[in-house]
Image (cartoon, rainbow, N blue to C red):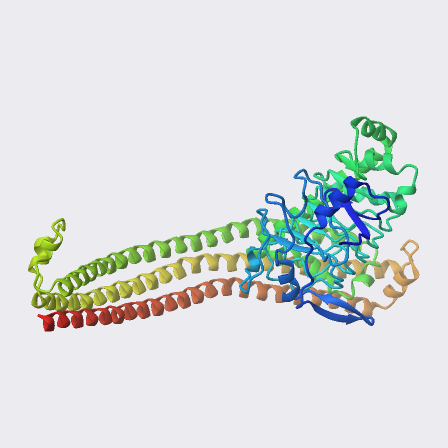
Length: 623
């Protein structure tokens, strides 16, 4: 019943769409099995117009069509393949076949229903849907397999939240650039077969890649292969159909530079081929390895610096690290002052002394920051111990009361049921038979009164525990504020001392520049200077302008220094005050919620006790 147009066959998500001519009977039988029971197009599919053409919009109707379960799937096979060995068989394009299906990852198709739980869906196929833009997949956050092949998608976007994806098929689309995959760090299989790609890029974060299909694109540079060297787990690559494959050195070049590959363009790689290829490109490989080693070292250094700056930021010491460069970055006189012979010597001396002082300040500051952090951790632990202890005491009181109430409820039900009959006679195995035999409406009424009194007592006890906890926590905060306040004072004093040292260095720098300028002016007047540039001579010729430039630079440096000092001191002070404010607010909310909970429990128990009284009264009336 199908008029077959294309057969899609591939390996590890790599599809090839070919015109079918002269299919053998065996091939036709296999195709018929794959295409049997096609999916009907959902009536609720959305649509949009773009460039005068109508495209499918991914909406709830489209997703429900994919989750309809009409496409037969053998039990135990995942959506990604039917042979169980990593080979992926796409479905042919035929009249009436949409190629949409979805799986829960356990070999079962999800049946369409009104209350579909999108968060449970692990596999989704939206093939042959004429989709232009990927959107509205937010609820499918646990997808591991997503098929969007054979559409008209132009950009990869709106899938960065699908962080659990391991298999993504975007083959047969109109994608011109690889992008939007930075968050898909678990991706193992990626197919971008038959698109419009001209380069391989933006896959750095996909470190788990094992299979990559880039066949039938527009990649034309053999050097593009070098980009794939960073993926140590890559075992299968398809580039067949790209202009680069016409290069006579293509296969040997790829095998030499991607030595861990097992399959290239649908064929198994022999180890002997790799050895030969690496010998052929030995010099290039040495250069590549040296370059990669340098890049790795730079990347590691950058990462260490980033981690170091994060530590400094947490300790409010990042200003100490960057103050020197910050002062000179806003100095508009610096380019002219650099014209002065001898400026670099004075500047380098200033920078060297600054770095020495900054390093000592940072090391001591990190120690004080850790001391402050330890105090915070000690506080959190004390809070946890107090609240846990009080919670256990409250639970014991509550459970004891509930046990009494349940026992009374049991007696009331038995008396109501048995009337004046001997309950123990009805249930001779009851261990509380004697108590049951003595239970009467009168004794139960007294028990209700006693339980009501116990309810009042427990409420008072719980309120007392809560009041004690409030007092304990308040005392705890007072102690913390005192101890942490001392550490804060140490940190502020430490910061102030550093800025005073830097201020002295800055004053010395300005003085040295003034002395240098005076010396240069005297030498210029006596023609004792060596040959100078025109800009330098012009700058030195105007003494007043020269001195103003030095003073202007000095003012900028001091202004930046004092501003950063105020900012850093405020940050340290606010850290403590912020912690105290946050804890007081937290304790207030905790107390309010706890009091509300106690009163609610008191009222609920009162209602239950009143119901028991009515049941007892009913039993008494029957008597």
